[in-house]
Length: 140
Image (cartoon, rainbow, N blue to C red; front, side):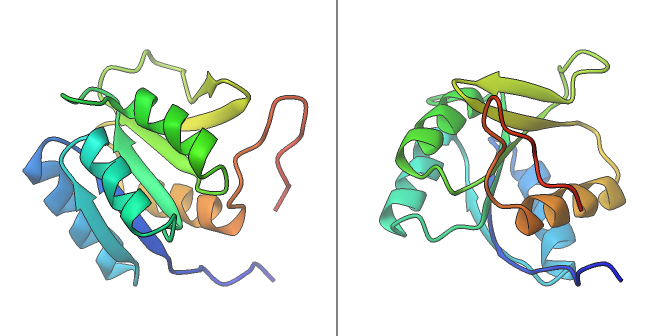
């Protein structure tokens, strides 16, 4: 029997309010608490202010101030237990993960289906630490 889906505190970082609104609704409908930031710098400030009390970060790649890749890099150093999923409309077809230092960060290609989002969030919350180079991700 599969594990029940776990709800968590999810930080959505995207410079487009309309994208944040859609994600907020979809995630709240599944029982998650949603925090929001308009760019990576604001998202990092929020995580620091909460002393890392965030279960998952969903971040757009292309944003002003601090982009999603930069945010993921800093989070990986300061809060290595917080998984980060990057989102991008500009990811080449077939790219599902990018490497950041030793972490492997999943990339969710926009536009995405609500079921695809729910599945990825559930997986990230079930296995909260991103796989490190040379280590295998836990198998469900």
